[in-house]
Image 1 (cartoon, rainbow, N blue to C red):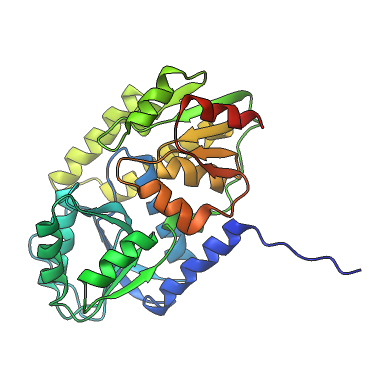
Image 2 (tube, rainbow, N blue to C red):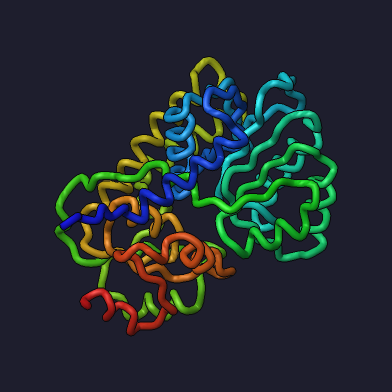
Length: 324
């Protein structure tokens, strides 16, 4: 009697990221641009997954720049691949990052430009068309997107770009071992920003768990430290190696999120990376949508096969599902 070896769905998703090696081959030399310097732990998880990917495949990062310190003029040798950070800021909700992305495309027409997995969302169609006009003038763009909706939009708009479907870079961190046994029952990890929904607000009124978001996960001293690093980077850093300091500090910030999530039996979240972090910890979690469908699109594209994860329409009754 032969035993069938079952592969965890998270192993499959991590393995999907290897497809990026077709355009950033192992041993490549790159510039990593638009890495996050702020308190959103989801972006920090993406960054740590991205850096792990570079390390695992011997991809040499010659220089790193954030939106705060990318110079107006920068001479990048043409044999360097410019790799732009992934996430959920492609579109007109977060203009600073989109402007940097478009500047790179415009200023480096002869470089290979790789945009790591993004979710695309535009409020204004005219803005999307403007972006497309810029992108379609470049002959070597490789755009990875995180869901089928973004893939359809990008394929339609970006006629000269190579568009691919890929999971989020945080999946490279699989597996993350919990740091403790769960002693509390339920963590509500809910958005407190422009992407929260009315359904989430209804659920908050009936809640019986602990509430957190990235902004409340970190205490006053930690937030002050982040602000200090942001200000230093914006001014050019000075004598201190701010990138190295930020790299170490974000290790601490991500570890804090892992510790907090480890302490709960279940997580209910409207944060995509609340969901992904729960999956990386193999922790039962329920995912609510955000304001424009990013979460449900991601779940339906990638994580619906994970038994410990569920996507639900938010209502006060959904928390009853946790006990089943």
